[in-house]
Length: 437
Image (cartoon, rainbow, N blue to C red; front, top):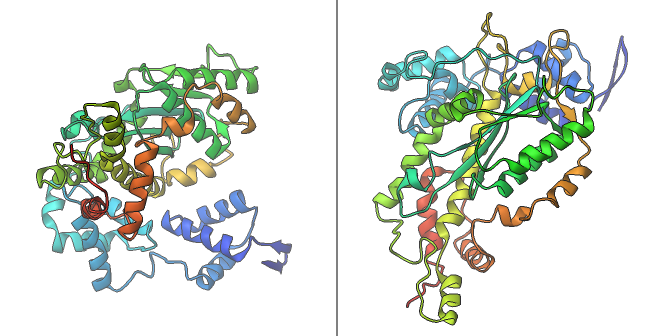
């Protein structure tokens, strides 16, 4: 797409790229000025506000100034209320969740709808009530420190469902609050697995932070070694005593990522946990049935082999996929939510984490992260004894082939609706042959 004005020729991105960018800015509910900055930063496109408005009309970009009719807006809001089992999501959260789906509704309209149709939720929420007290954090800009940690609230001990569980690992920028990576892993305490997660993050963003902040667990040896080696190779001029490549803290002091888990639980984590446990409580998932967890009971080696092939790991196939879709949804929500303006806050405020991370004000902040040649990542992976595929394995290859056939036979149902996952579990289950001892 090309154009021309008093400033000369304009080379716009292709229409599909430009349309996608404008939809993303709308989902973050950015101001006109912020949209113009992002277009310049991400697409090297400098335009006037009037041109931006014309492009938004052309691509039918939703606007909070032109919300859907109130009866339709009410239906959208109440749909989010229905998804929130614990009624913890407030006006801002619901607005961001809807904006991420391309539906922009003003805060005051959402508040009126909640007051009229879901007052019990409003009565239970007060600004800051029940939240962990925040410590004052500061950093000169994005990439100064990335905070990493695992989330334990859905593991086997928390679910109490006969040994199955779901573990999560996340990486978050200190200054912008941007959530870089949030992934379901088979075990967030294994060094090989977290080593690959760290390298996955580098491959996604082509950079490392100046400092990785982690806890003191057993999962970080490769993360520690690779971050230290990359810092030495790419920033030899930095004093490691002043800006260490890795900083290890107790989990309770790793507040940026710890507070994220609090928000995750409030926004959707508690709902997800209740849905998972409901399958156990209703008998959909029975740990005493060998088709559910991975159980091997046999007499001879040949029977063991047959049992391993037929005994189901269905929970460990279905739920990691379903949970990852929820984590992706939460990541979009988090990075698109607007952090309220706080005059005394040292770090970013008054913007979305995504916008702050991508386009910080260059007159006030510095992009601190260090760009990395991703060819190096392949060499670093070779140093990890377990391959990426093995470290992220939830089920064995034999069962994987079996369950994929069953999934196809069930019609490849969509796992994105958390409330339908147990129904899908049962639908797949009937297509898996049951081993009888």
